[in-house]
Length: 250
Image 1 (cartoon, helix red, strand yellow):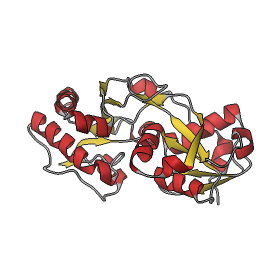
Image 2: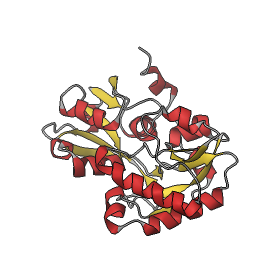
Image 3: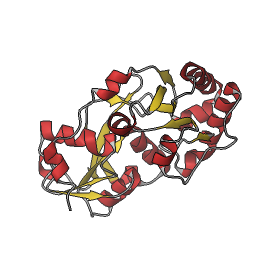
């Protein structure tokens, strides 16, 4: 059996995530003793032994739909978003006063091409409100994208709104960067389980575990509750245009 919470598992949050999983396991009455770490996400998400994990909206709608089951969506209480939703925050250096139209002349840093918040949402936003970047830099992670902007290797980046809050709380990047714009909200990163698992049973355990978390851990994880967002809402989120896809070609 496998459980993994790798989406928001920076070192400062790992102990709280461990306690969260321990509570879920206690309410379920089964599952692995420990969270899996340092394993490829796709191997975990595709495993028939998956009990509990979290994925991103774009991987879910493009590759995982039908292969896993949605448990529910965590509510992180993010500003400007309905319960269970999040958005991308577009950031630039604090000493860079350019607006989004001007920043588009430069290099856009992104974590990976299957990221809803790092790639899909900002590309849709830029197509509607500004224009696509002149160049892109793939970094492999939101914090790495933020660091690339801070270091001057990129002009701007889009960060998951929760990751942005966590970076401001647990790193100096919040002091180095400023918010330029925000995308429209979309359903946040859902909890998933393998086909064959009892979704209502797992969801009940997750809700009970959130309720049982200490106030300190709830604050650390930004967890407010579990929201039932229909599958169709995830599938309706737009993908980037073919023009954006061209930027990914070497």
